[in-house]
Amino acid sequence: MIQLGIVDDKAYLRESLKRKLYSNTIHIAIEAASGEDFITALKNATIIPDIVLMDIEMKGMDGIKTVAIASALYPTIKFIMLTVIDDDDKIFAAIKAGACGYLLKDEDGFELLKTLSYVMENDSTPMSPSIARKTWQWLSAIQQIPVPATTKHTTTLPIQSYEVLTEKETTVLQLCMEGKNYKKIADAMYLSPHTIRQHMKNIYKKLHVNNKVEAIRIGLNNKWIG
Image (cartoon, rainbow, N blue to C red; front, side):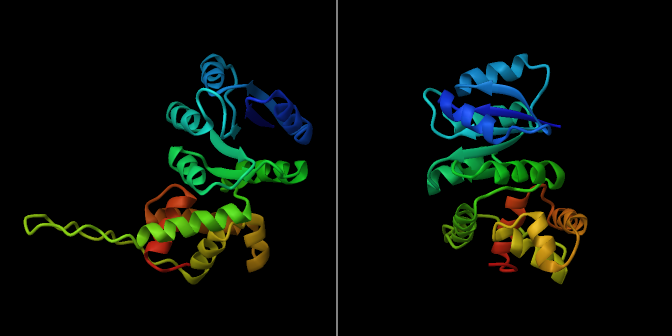
């Protein structure tokens, strides 16, 4: 059973999400109409959600600020941002705030249920394909920003070294960058989802990270993927 939180300032959209996600595998642990109400509900909750579907634009405390506060207080919650447009600045602000995924509100119920299951089973990072492409393009662009010239008195820091990824691990990381979930990666590589999860654990260990965004950033920076 997935314990789910829904945060949106429009009641009809909350009801729409609940209808889309009606299932015996989903329990709505928290429903809130604002960021402030959500933080209060969390503090008083007997059941902490596994995943929270968070609206971006709300009156008062918006979804990005809410995630920044809540993810620091409750690091086990996975926040998935829902919005009607794939706005670049908001995508990146949400990721930096602690969101693990970003989906458009027009996703149908079947796709949403699949996404929630993948997040729970595979610790995957859900992104609509168009959003995934923009996110990784943004990360790639960051690596190309020139570092300001340093003075002669500045101490040069050593470049971080990482263990070499295998060919299969590199392929897995490349497919992650393209927005594919573990099931689709497994199908593309003729492997099982369990094997893909193991490859991702190995990648995290080799790169000294604990999430997919950081792994992809390092892959782009080192030109292993792109």
